[in-house]
Length: 387
Image (cartoon, one colour):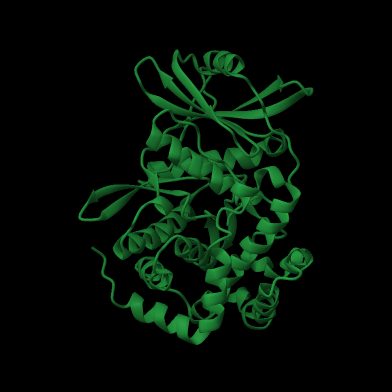
């Protein structure tokens, strides 16, 4: 369960609509408990006028889907080209520098062969425009971006192979090593040491544990936190760190089939949790979420781990912490998801999209234990090759 970030735009076709709906779910699953509603609510007439003014695009078709806190439209121009218009909520639009770094990062990765969305310049050459708009509750400033559209389906919706997951693990490491070359005077905005979703801040879950009262799984969460404090926190000082995507979940990776049951990644979405943090956190987050929709979740870790280590080999401390980091992310998702669902009951379906499988997976991994699961992951990793 992941809550918040930039969700995808809106598309007209059935397959594309499902893709964008999945991106919506990804955002809703990942939104932080402290968020305030600052949603833009432009109508189609306002949006059409805005696009024509900013981009000079002649619209042939425009469609929309509800969004958790942003507003998103699919734009089809007269040449049948598709674009995604993203209008950010006014709260996140306040941090223009952070949005600029996210936009820069997407473009930088695209230039280096990573299939990420990129922003289309306005008629005056801007990649993002801060627009003051009155949506009926007073004028507020919203960040507006027209983005490229990425075809494909979310990996959560596809019966991927283990070799596909190997490729995902490799891609995660490629993204992070590529971002080592990113240059900007504003990278300090990616330092977020107090973020509740950071895997270095697992103990912050304790402040929300009341939402688990009466659930036996609360004891598992408490035990994970306790072991994290004693076994992982002392090691974090030795973890390598840099800029990471921070949310490579199964709804933020788009794939297309290439035959024989295999897929290729055709899109990496949602850079709203871009952060400077430990590289092993990226690996743990990816493993945790890729397990959720997989029919054989225990087989996932080894495949992703093998792909990751084909680019970036883990240190001893990182290897020894991986199991608890994966469990830590599952605990964050479970607890913060329940908290947010209680706070925003009208969005409960989106927020708790992984609620059915997350607790079951957490319970199973805890019962099997660190020694067994780690042994399987690292033994399985040795069976993969870089095809």
